[in-house]
Amino acid sequence: MTLNVGQRVRLAADLRLTGSVTPAEELPEESGAFAASVALAAGIEGTVERVDEHHRQQSHEVREYLRLKSLLDDFGHQMPPESRKRLDEQVGALEEEWAAYQRRMLRVTVRVRLDNGFVLDEAPEEAFVSV
Picture (tube, rainbow, N blue to C red):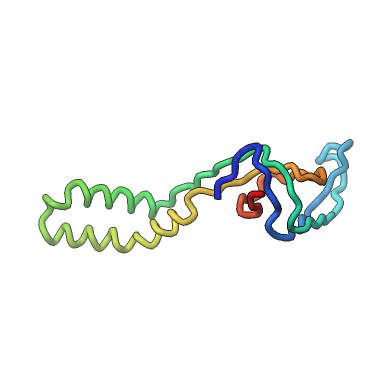
């Protein structure tokens, strides 16, 4: 599902946010950190304010797969049979890395202003469902 700015959404599961808290009047480097936890119940509605797409970095194996696959597709028909077979094997050995990269290639995060006043920023879009 792709969310859009202005779209109404509902929190799909209970969330518990934990971490350090700094009073708003103090600079983070000047104050002591307080520990805090906030629980948000599934079903809370809000409005999408921003959608960010984050493209994952390609590993060396993914770049090598793309290079070898391109070579095979463009020139494989001209290669001697043994060279083509070796290239096929190299491409085959990297296909698992390529498939894994494709599954996680794009990560989408959103900023949602919930109706209760909380703002969730950089939350994965999977945490919400459309209303």
